[in-house]
Image (cartoon, rainbow, N blue to C red; front, side, top):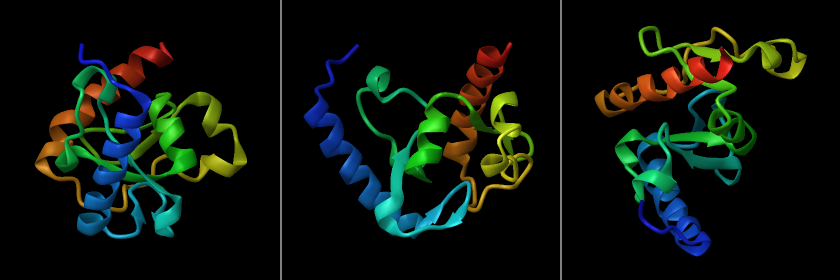
Length: 127
């Protein structure tokens, strides 16, 4: 596994975010139009394990939603492209409306290749 220092992660996260803002615009993939300063580059794989960002697989997410995505409380059903929330989040009024909603961007072939891995780890973590 490549060594990842915090400064490296921050620098590459920033570059990845800028590239995603250019290609996807100021849109949270899960909640819709969002000011750029609230968006982060999220990836359906572990950067710590991969050692690099794959922009074509990245998603722009609001920082709070990014955290929930990383914790596997929010995922995208690969066959439908709709959001599924953990049982805990479905019970929270501030998040429940996301459950079953379609993503707000076009999912490309590269997204579709990686989202099943995130989905499978989500399903395992909920078991």
